[in-house]
Length: 441
Image (cartoon, rainbow, N blue to C red; front, side, top):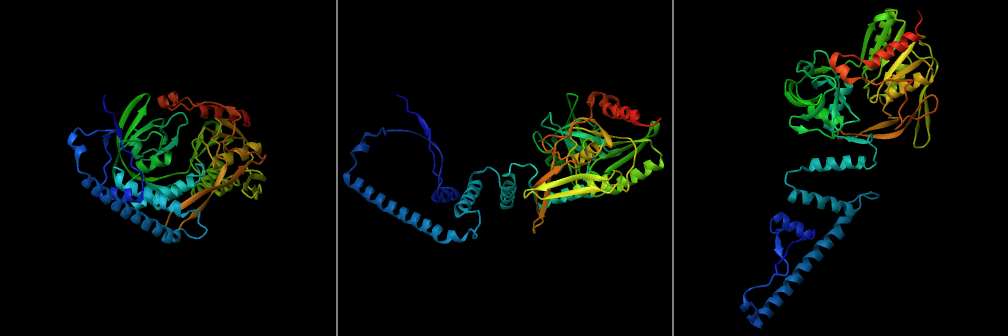
């Protein structure tokens, strides 16, 4: 009868870990129930058997004594590890250290203590199951602050999440940017960054790979109309314009808001002032692809042209409500249309809901993303930051759009193929049509 081989399983104990570190334990396949073929083995003297038995007993007693000493050490000194009232019990601390040791000994690549701790911090925040409650390391904050301040080194493309794909979509490309010079186009999907497949990564993770030092190269593999396109882009200094204004035909003013960053309010005021100088008869506010930004920024921008009334209100865990209102002193009575899509989120939705509920504007495009919660930010002394979801936004009519989104008054899809072909914007065309119907002749 053939003998079967079974994989020996090693119980993870303090002694096992010590042996692993010293390299004295092997995990190997060995025959189960294997019998010796040497018949003389059964004829060894009883004296030798007794000696081996006694030696085994002594070794076992010594091993038991060692284990008792280790356990006693943990019991005596381990209780001092966990601070009083800490949710980290001694057992939890012991387990963390045990897992760290297993990584040190078994994992095929090196992992630093800082990386392990960083993972623990991120895991604590992720335990909420809320994707907006996150931990940022000091290095993460350098990246975030650069974006918020509007200046960094990169390729000059706006990246966004595509709900229908596991890849990041290039929403737009800045004129004269390194990305444009390399041939990158809006509508391209990023497949790889410097050889790393980015499937399933968040936009933030992809951005961290794309950005880098000035005058360094980044290699991208893009998907464009079913074909792969490889480009090499030399990173440069990128300055983000949060607001873009253009006077269009037939007396239409077009204001695109890319984000509600620190610089956005001043740029938005400039755009409004210029449109007034141009004597426009109607305004289109384009919030497509706008991921949001600061609550105060969105409120301040709404106060520049909205009538008196409630803009938005928030409620926290304790039910505390804060109203954000407009006094109407700067109201601009002019026909308006707001353009939205699936990636208009957070502060974009605050402005959209305020304009819709007040009857000031007609919403054209697609239903918004549905981020109706706000976050409180807590700096940590080591330069890291935690951002925690602390409450919900409510529109003037008392509706929370979280995980629901805001339905447009006029729904229209963007014809991506037409846009890539000759930049025909079907949503903007519809917005112009709707606005003209509201404008005075």
